[in-house]
Image 1 (spheres, rainbow over the protein chains, first blue to last red):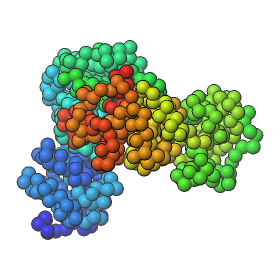
Image 2 (tube, each protein chain N blue to C red):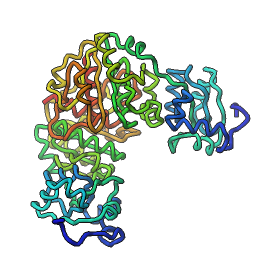
Image 3 (cartoon, rainbow over the protein chains, first blue to last red):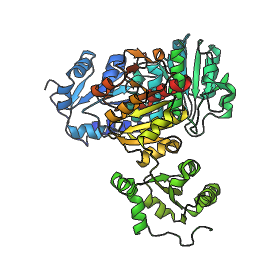
Image 4 (cartoon, chains in turn brown, yellow):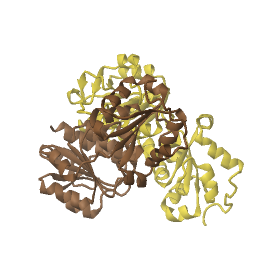
Length: 267
Length: 267
């Protein structure tokens, strides 16, 4: 072992409790920190947002399996603590943290910085999205298809929820994400920058193939169950429907995937 | 109450046990029946596949809320049994069956019938797909974007798994689904019919925008973790990658959504 010789072995220690508390939003908000679980997510954290990494906890087996990740942490000056399986399990939100877990500082950026990043590109706005898996899929799709930023309203799931972090598979660290702005303010700020607002909603009179996606624009995605509120639709430039043949409607993750893919393909 | 006056109130009765057993694959395979939970799924069952409906269990509150569904069941000659919340909860796989649950006979069709349905259209092949939510999303996407059939290999998740049935939101009843054929046989049968086989795989040398989707074709989607096996790739006509900018890779549900949307849009 080349890690800290003081192996953490007490799953009931104060340190373990503090890390485990990050599974809850109140503790994340208070500490300004969140959990990054599993080798893949930790690798992306260190590769794209190393200054945000606070500390890495790793089991002996995981250190041997992922020496390059542990080395990357040390190179970045991130303290590495060896711990037992029991300690890691007690800290983690997931049942399978695969022997590795980092604590990171928040990585979101101010709204203005996210809007600067959009430039001539495209972004996605999430409002009242509540399911962590859906939010994660939207972040992943934004990343995959080349969105410039993700703008999350105050009334949405916490992007630092461990389930969101896991389901983004690192995308949270790849592109600017801003959080916590009320949706009306978020949309007004987009308009001020000349970012065309496209509400993704089955009720839309415009269909996806008809929309001009060449200029700066943002897809506005709403709640899983009830979609976008009328007040939000009113603030958008167009309401766009994805043409479908038969199913009731697409779920949020499917709709976002199709819209973001269309925007990426238009460039 | 206009339903059977003998309200089912014993959650430990033999009948309740038999219905609850359908949460397990062995019982589904033995009985040739499966669970259809919640008003939305029951509505689609009765609307698209009423002859497959065996019996409907409904609480008093749900009957009052969804009189049209209960009427549809009676019109179709499906026995309706009133039951208590406790009985419904004991029968259901989900924690929230919303007061209504049907038992249905399998709705899959023979392979030849599914292939007949393809004609000049397109289909999707699932092989080694293991996650019920993913299989459900693929079925839903196939339905939404106008696929003619879904062909599920023997080594995939059971489409009658209650989690699959729930996540399809009725799509399971909207288009022909065939199950249980070994993947090599499935692909050979497609080729015999002149259905072009497109393997969806990040390793593909052809990209999605380059593929001709005008003729009959089938998207072949593989396992969530390891993708398509080399033997399967060899049996396909082309391996097609979705161009992405940054994220590691798309998950199965996202990739299937994009591919099926592209096929639907090409028509």
